[in-house]
Amino acid sequence: MAKTIVFVGGGQMAEALLKGLLQSGEYTAEQFEVVEPSAARRTHLETAFQVSTTVSVSTAVPRAQVVILAVKPQIMADVLHDLKPVLTDQLVISIAAGLSLSFYAAILGKMVPVVRVMPNIPALVQEGASALARNDQVGKEDLAFAASLFGTVGSTSIVEEKQMDAVTGLSGSGPAYVFAFIEALIDGGIKSGFSHQAAAELAVQTVLGAARLVQATGEHPAVLRGRVCSPGGTAISGLHVLAKNGFHGIVMDAVEAAVQRSIQLGRC
Ligand SMILES: NC(=O)c1ccc[n+]([C@@H]2O[C@H](COP(=O)([O-])OP(=O)(O)OC[C@H]3O[C@@H](n4cnc5c(N)ncnc54)[C@H](OP(=O)(O)O)[C@@H]3O)[C@@H](O)[C@H]2O)c1
Image 1: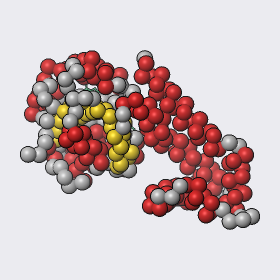
Image 2 (image 1 turned 90 degrees about the horizontal axis):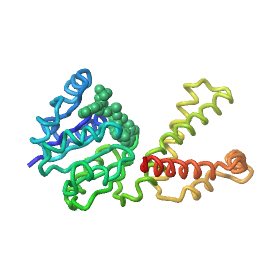
Image 3 (image 1 turned 30 degrees about the vertical axis):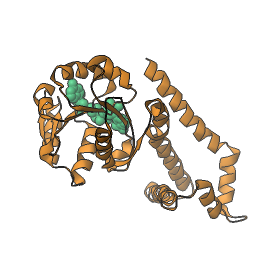
Image 4 (image 1 turned 135 degrees about the horizontal axis):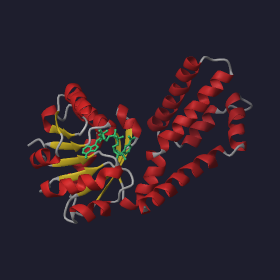
């Protein structure tokens, strides 16, 4: 029987997931209900996806087999206190950044199966990278189900919870580094005489194409970089500047700083 899935929180990420799930053709709108306090968001989701919506977990959750928590971390404790009395045997999946599995166990109890997911912002265009970690109440079947849900908005990896800070520093925060890189490429184009629009078109497609080439060939990026650099050519001249200014180390430091910040926030 098709599972009924309740989203608690109908914001950006819930919308991205709903879009991916419905576009995949594996789910129907009748399987979803969204708990969302904002009337404007409820109307938007009902109109865009034909899903039903409500303001209360107590009416929606008892009918569901899966609960996806898509609210901001700051209000998660309140949401869990509302959820606890109406939870029976549902699988709980949370996408809130920074909250550990023990946080959920402390409020819901240790017997509730919880999967913690770290998606990233390209999930909005079904190109996300999501990492999933589970507690010991989650069986293989439920974990596979959770992975298949997030597979509709990009790639998924199963990780140990202790790796979640590293995930946050790499794929969670990574889009911000790539946006900064694209912005710099565009500015380089503008400095060389292009309009913003022309430079942006070239820069975005360059990043997209280079990423797709790494993915499609499975080659180490250093091998592909070597192929682009002909002796005495233009690419090696540009790369020389990046190397001299520590580009590689700066990006590694950025990932490391975000990992450390994630560890720090998790302790608060
Ligand atoms: N966006 C990302 O790139 C990203 C990436 C990874 C993880 N995440 C995680 O995903 C979660 C959701 O993020 P988001 O960007 O989708 O946030 P968002 O757009 O602010 O969505 C959260 C939604 O929850 C609603 N809400 C507030 N209180 C509620 C309650 N008691 N019950 C049910 N719904 C309630 C909010 O309504 P109001 O606006 O009316 O308060 C809002 O519509 C966060 O925990 C975040 O850490 C997001």
